[in-house]
Image 1 (cartoon, rainbow, N blue to C red):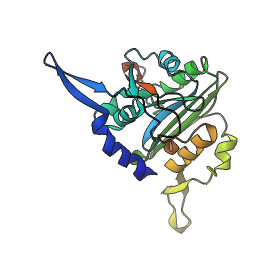
Image 2 (tube, helix red, strand yellow):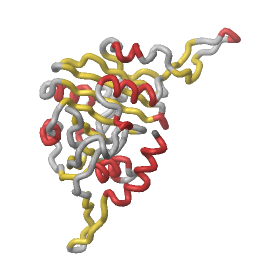
Image 3 (tube, helix red, strand yellow):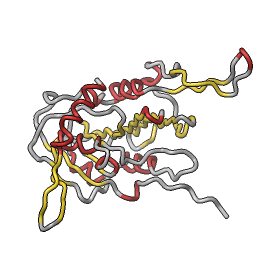
Image 4 (tube, helix red, strand yellow):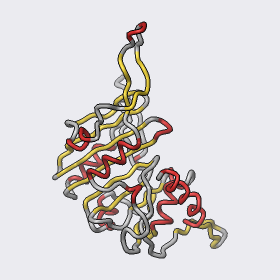
Length: 250
């Protein structure tokens, strides 16, 4: 599945947008021919929002420069090394869910940084019956998930190679059913002789995707025939989402 996704990206990202000269300026033009869903999820962050209206999601996230964009172009853009740092793709509705996809989403980074993820999720919780957050990025051993239901943050968890950085609410039934107490062994802390010491255990990308399938939809299973052709929206992430270190008191 991972090979399929990245193979699709390699083949389509060049066609997802093009640079046009108009009055001497370069501008990015995203494809607007409606198409069916494209898979995503590996090494990616996304929101799953209970809605049938992507325009409502755009408004709730306060995205001011959204332009119509098809799946192929939007997913290609958020995976692109250059465009992906600042772009977000809001997808057409898929079985009652709208996804907001992109590494530009705010992430929980621990006590040394301002938490911009929780306020965003709580705000969305006041507008939609359910909002979910997922982030999987194996290159830095970072995995996260959160769930807001009926306006209440019921679960939030994030772990990096430095340990747990976000942990709110009790583990859900779905987490426990996936055996998430039996995390993949990643290393040993304070090893003492042959007896060993405290174990540092982490989930994997597979855990994140399987949890997404239990809570909403595993986006790596999406394909062109999953839903009729439609358009979503491509937008630039607000600068207010950028990470900021907390200021230490004087």
